[in-house]
Amino acid sequence: MLDNSKRRNDLLQTSMLSIFLSHNRKDKPFVRKLSERLQAHGIRTWVDEAEMRLGDSLLSKIETAIQECEYLGVVLSPHSVASKWVRREVNIALNEEIHGNRVKVLPLLYQPCDIPGFLADKMYADFTKDFAEGFETLLARFQSDLDQEKHKQKRAFEILRQAYQDWLSFGRQDTQLLSQDKLELMLQHLTQPEPSPDLLEYLLCSLAHLPVNNISKLGSSLDSLNHWFNETDPPQVVALFDRLLNHQNSQVRLGAITIGEKLGQTSVAKLLVNRLKDEASQEVKRASLRCLSHWGQPLPNHLAQSLLANADWLVQTYAWQSLAEKNTCLLVADGTEFAAELGQLAQNAGFRLVTFANLSSQWELDRLEPDVFPMFKLVIIVRGEHYTQQGREDFYSKLRRFVAEGGILFATSWVSYETVYHHEFAHLLPFRHVQSSFNEDIRIACQPPQNYLAQKLFTQPISYQTSVELLQP
Image 1: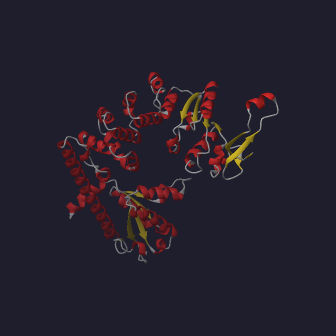
Image 2: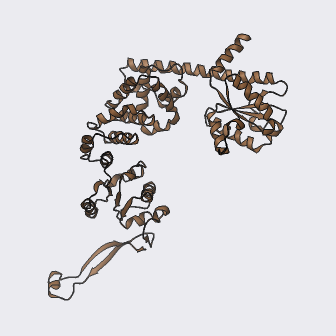
Image 3: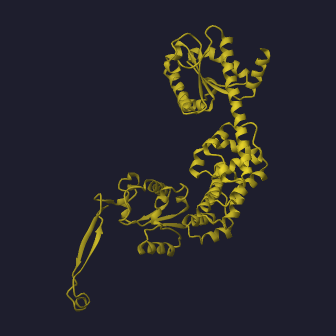
């Protein structure tokens, strides 16, 4: 018995477990005693009177604390079961538990009371007769959970090591990389032992093969990678990314950039710069420039100058930004000569022109990073009647912020029709559409004046069809 008790105490002392003690203030003496005993066993406790500071937002602080603790211990008594505040705290924790997060709700029966129905199916620690007995039950629960987690960690490491061996045996084929489900399992449970550089490379390769959106969805799970990177020699980390950034599959290169950016691995910035000139994929080139921009890493002048010759408008934008050019203009064109003439006027006025004219990829404007528009001083939008009133909400929201922050906008009147339902943006315009549509197929007839030259040039009346917009200041 003593050996088991000592083993459990040693395990708890190194576990860094934490528990939020939800209670009614009338039960405070019991809660203080419980908190002191738990802390003596190496378990961090969150008790409102100790953690709250003057000026803290109560609900926000408590919700964050519950999410950051492994357990919520609800102290049950006649006072607490009648407390709406305790019920709210328990509901937050139960919601986390239901959605698969790590918070677990532990009922702690302090005084006899009617246990709420939503806790009735949970095993509880009974402190009503003997504090020591209830405390022993609580510690046993912690030990059981830790033993289970240790087993999961060991099994995750075994799965990773076997999968890595299969990858090597089959010549590092992509088909032997980890699936997203197994990657999530690794990132969640693989804490001890830390993977070797070879296993870390395998994990990184598997992650890089995922679609970029799937990598982003992993969120805080990627924090484990940062911990392992910090325990690995920096040259080895750079070498890992170098191999991925030189991979023949552009999807892998894109994934490596996404991982590096999300983890803040600025040590790979030089690799990105060195690969930019010869990078064949425009998508990878864009991702590299976006990442370098977020890190505040300027390009060498000669490289930025060479990128200005690139056909991609976003690559040109990042190049001008790196050259610290403030007088830039974005022309969102509709492919007409009129749009080209407006662009020429902007150039004649001294603006560096970047043109977006891909009519088949207008959705791209909605997906722009928020920091792209502030790179321009002037935005010109040329729209025609082939545009609709749907699908541009994000684009015009970004434009509204651009103007609110001092940017200059020049837009054709059709923008007013396209944004008639975008009320925030509509307030920026000096006019509005009188009707909810435009007048189409209007026939206009022209009669030559009564003079010799006009009669000779135009022997017949001239008529043509057009569309008319009715505007109101």
